[in-house]
Amino acid sequence: MSELDDLLKTLEGLPTGAEEKREWVDERSERLGDLMARAAGEITEFAATAYALTLVAAGDIAALDGIERIWSTFVTEVVGEYTAGMYLTGNLSAFVGVPGLGPPPEAAAAWASVVNENAVAYQAAATNRIVGASTNMWQDVRGKVTSNIQDGMSAEQTKSAIEEITGYSEFRADAIGRTEVQGAYAGGEMAGARALGEFGPTEKSWLSAVDSRTRESHLDADGQTVPIDEPFIIGGELMDRPLDPSASAAEVVNCRCVVQLLYPGDTRPDGSTVEEATEAIEPGDDAWEFSDDPAVIEERLSDLPEYETFRDTTPQRQYQEVRDGRTEFSSYEVDQVMIDIASKSGADGLPTVLSSAEFQARAAIQSSRGFGNGRAAAQFVDGAYEPGIGLKGNGYYSTQNLAEGSEYATKLGGDGKGGRIIKMGLPDDARVISINELDDQMDRLGDRVSDVFRDDPNRYALAQGYDAVRVPRVKGDWYIMLNRSRVLIDGGT
Image (cartoon, rainbow, N blue to C red):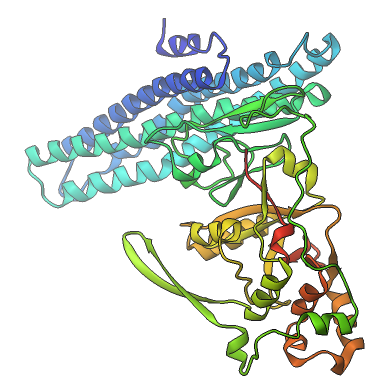
């Protein structure tokens, strides 16, 4: 039996349960990683040794020319077939997970046709991706070999250099192989689930391998549950599933997380039941009733502090954080007027954190907010009320464009380091005013409103009892949250 036949045989026997699935896939990713590492090592050692033996004064590099061609053949004939097998196994895992008797025969036949077409396309794409991912590896190998030998190394030094380079190529190939196997199974499982259509799962949960090898962002995501066609938010990135190829390498390479597919009646990681009715959770009540009467607003604000300068209304806060082993000091501006109003009205209360399922059921308006670091994100959830300064008025900005929120978190966090994103929303009885309505209102009031409110109309909206200001946008509206006690948070479980 060939090594390939032996590998394909390991695809037999579908796992059940998250932990068994993780172990099953991990074992098969390890086997392919080992095979790819051996192949890469043998190719590297053979080519590098041949180059050293055929070296002439000018440097004959012909012996290195065939490295990528040999590797491409190996990937196409061995790796591509194995990963395609893992992809189909993921498809089949989704199919056998359908509760009851599963789809009727005609639906099952249609499903099989779709997944077979998907598998053919996947194998071609995976082969190209693996060959492409290996390009830098082989370029590095070629560069290291030519540089070391042309530096005038002795035969013994050359041998040691080749051994070091061989180890490098083995390590890189192993990482590529393991990641591709994990990704093939996860991608096949999700594609198989979606191909089930009306007979498929309605939700999905991210389940992390909880140990010392697991990324912090993936540990944070453990148990995050979302509708089947919505993305997870992992480390500030939108991911359809573990090892999503659209995500950055920082969230993908050597990932061992898995997805739990959920059907109506299944139990989520938080213990609730899919489509289970839960007790109503009332967000914090406003201390003030809503009013747009200027006389009422004036009375409410009669004992606010005197703001003598502009800086009195927008003071700076300082904080320090450790990043990459260095202590960095930063500052940010807050709206002191809003802070003072919120402390009187109760709008500085904490948001309500819900499970993902409860959030989906209760958040009539949904958006996301990017934070530059975990400290800022945590403060919004359970710390001091500190609305920021913004171009469209002050408050806590959020966007209905999830990609925009993720990009903002990445930008603030610095190349994706430390950025966080929180999915938030408002209940269906939230009081929201559009920025255009608010501007018209301020124009009508004119001098009846003091300068401190004309400087930022959102302050006046908060004093009236509005929970948020909506800013219409083509690619997803912004919601500037004013009353934090009315905000709902997707807790990810």
